[in-house]
Amino acid sequence: SSTGTTSFTAVGAPTNGSLFLNPAGPFSFTASISSGSAGFNYRAISDILPCPSDIERIDITVHPNPTVATGMINACSGFTKTGNLNPL
Picture 1 (cartoon, rainbow, N blue to C red):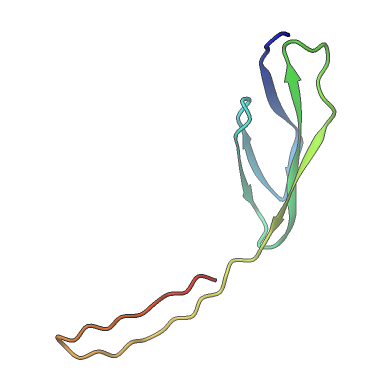
Picture 2: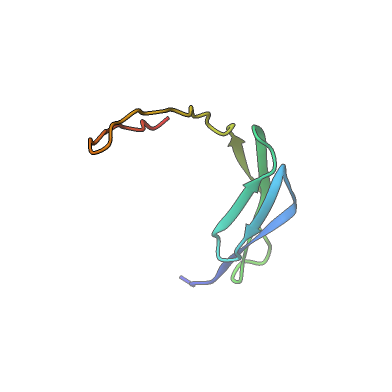
């Protein structure tokens, strides 16, 4: 069996965001919307196969930023107050 190198390339512009796709596979996608659908198309190219792969798609669901509340704690000088910020 042969061992070859596979590289990845974006096909067309990403939907609702910007993309950096490393040919080795890692990618970074930044959504340009606050919620909804985003994504990008890509294909794989192998140096041992005669043709590139079919175009595939990565779909990304963008969720709105979480809402957090401001709060206030009253404390007297010299006394310790403790609390907990709970994950959303």
